[in-house]
Amino acid sequence: HAKQSGRNTYRFFAEQMNVQAIERLDLETRLRRALENSEFVLHYQPQIDLAERRIIGAEALIRWVDASGNLTPPSAFIPVAEECGLIVPIGAWVLREACRQASEWQRAELPPFVVAVNLSAAQFRRHDLVETVIEALVLADLDAQWLELELTESLLLQDVDATLETLQRLKAIGIKLSVDDFGTGYSSLAYLKRFDVDKLKIDQSFVRDLVSDPDDAAIVRAIIEMAHSLKLKTIAEGVETQELADRLKLFHCDEGQGFWFAQPLPADALQDFIRAHAVPPRSIPA
Ligand code: C2E
Ligand code: MG
Ligand code: MG
Ligand code: MG
Image (cartoon, rainbow, N blue to C red; front, side, top):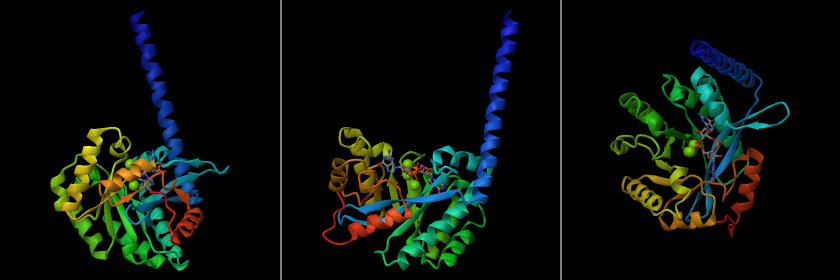
């Protein structure tokens, strides 16, 4: 009897694994097709200077639009795209599209702001990354100072010598660099002085309960103080309330990003948002 049930259990897991493998393969195929059929869009979330209450940047965040117009969030496909290597062509598209859009906004005579693009490790490790970035800038006719690349701590620490070289080449072009989800990786603070990054993005998980949790408040204050000592800027992710925005400003955090200011918006909606808040008296809540 035990043998029988063991076999059934085995069969159950084997079938489960099959289902998972098939679903993954299916997703891979659909992602490949999505790329060919241009089914991806970028939404842009404003980044606000907390002291001056103006938009100084926007983070490009990818979404997958299906035939009926439904949006699939990146969490549902970026991990698979990373595993199967599709993140490289998808990421190259994101870079081109973000640069094209940034250039279009500048031509539309919006007050200039930086567009930030997320990079995956698989993209960063490619020997042609710097060429891909330059190509996107040249194609869009965009000055490098308006492009920022968001890198994660774990990506930075994977192969320190190669990372250092790539970062130096990117900085030499004039691109800005930020560390995304700061505090969640293996925070090897020693590397911050070797890596020439511009900004730390304090992870949502420390920001969320900032007002009620003294430990989170202490961590955030320490990050901000350290960043400023190293001449780095700070931006808080996940700013969902006015209270949070006020507290962060009190802590001298430079910038904020989150639902309190705006959701990630389609390009035309971001343009409207900026126009609406560009003229003094500025009406961005803070
Ligand atoms: P991330 O880079 O840390 O992006 C911030 C995420 O937080 C976004 O989720 C954004 O919508 C969400 N967010 C913004 N404000 C708030 C807030 O006030 N509260 C809460 N709870 N969340 C907020 P999204 O757009 O679903 O993206 C998730 C992740 O997917 C990103 O995290 C990034 O790691 C990845 N991702 C997005 N676009 C790209 C891309 O083009 N390339 C790569 N490689 N990764 C991307
Ligand atoms: Mg990011
Ligand atoms: Mg982040
Ligand atoms: Mg995050």
